[in-house]
Image (cartoon, rainbow, N blue to C red; front, side, top):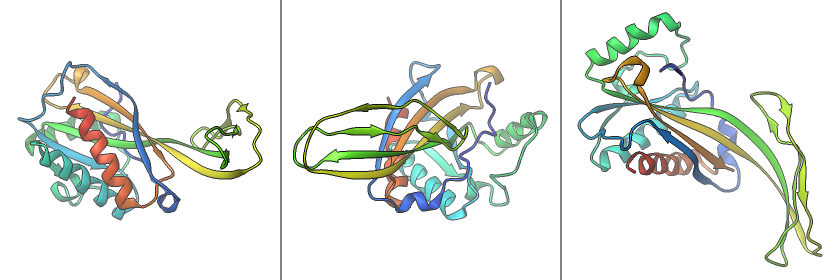
Length: 214
């Protein structure tokens, strides 16, 4: 089972300065028919080296959760001395969970950056169809190349667009359950060409809460 110490990773701040922002949930899994979290205290964790990113993410997700009837808290407020980037040994996890339960935390939501890929698109500007050229995606995590594919439509007017897509994974743990059943949901999201930290964080938080409420 993936443990509770999996976190967001370092989100590259320069990525938030690109042209446009699109956040969408591409996949989700849960081991319960519904996530009944309304009577539980939720801790939101943004594990990143950048303090501004962590605070903004946690504040936005807590705001959206509480606006929809949940009871949630930012980890940077609840545990101000904690270091989200600290490496934790597996044998220390039970102690961490015990401490969280002692502080009345029932559920932990952690989001992590798991991958990113760059792309180049050549788009027709004179019609509805376009020529799409996907060069081999360079996955920063694995440092390797993946397949090449293309579709061609002949037009006179085209423009080339470059961008980057971030893949994020949100994990929901219910600490009131037995250790083997604590992971109750996994949500995979794509953020395409994030524009600003504020806009991206708000859009991402809204999409996560919407999926949790299903």
